[in-house]
Image (cartoon, rainbow, N blue to C red; front, side):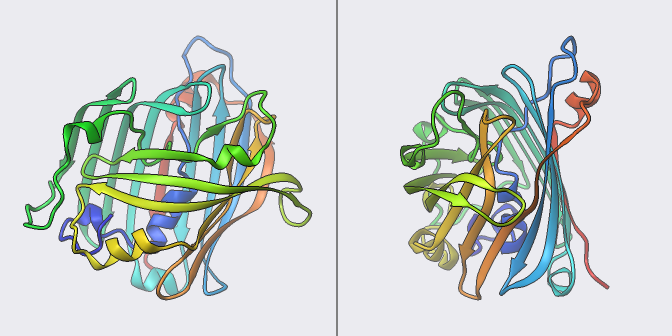
Length: 297
């Protein structure tokens, strides 16, 4: 995600990244033979400098071991003047005891008039196939992706899925390092400093988990990129996770990312209202994330 790179995959605007981070949870299609699983919905508002600039609607369907998620997001107001783009992403996989295990990931986007297509195929956390079009332009300072950087990884959507199961909500759940591969670069998302808090206002009320977040670039980025160094040094990123789907999984309730221009914040304004179960075929089709960032005229 190097803004200093000339590759469009590395030049995502901070608003676009924040909207995707809102969906940084697994999206697994349901088996065709299963009855329609329960469905969870949430609505998020994106603010910058305290001003509303976007919104997102999330729906998550849970099966026995599989999930499906649909997210629609849009920038509005002054943000739409500067950022224009659209995209969709999908991921399939299973959930292990404590993490998501990606099987396939695909991403298509038009950002600033430039198309980006990326796809991943993984087996037990090992990348078997990865394509990005257009590919990153070779540069002297680009850190090569080593073979070990493609092992034990998850995709960018599954990185904040925290299966809870029967485990109690505890600060130790924040102590994890999440290796993320997007087809062109590898980075680690490091969660720490967990605190269980009681949320008394807003769309969700109850216990939640606050985690500090750090972003650590590993490979595929440009080593001398200004934004890369700034993001790696950023010690002011927080995520608040709350139980969803009867406590089976923790999802982001809010995300705050400090930038050089101000704080980007994503916060749930509606949380946990169940939507009707979908037929299995439709649930499988909804296992994708769609981001729309229209230009305000």
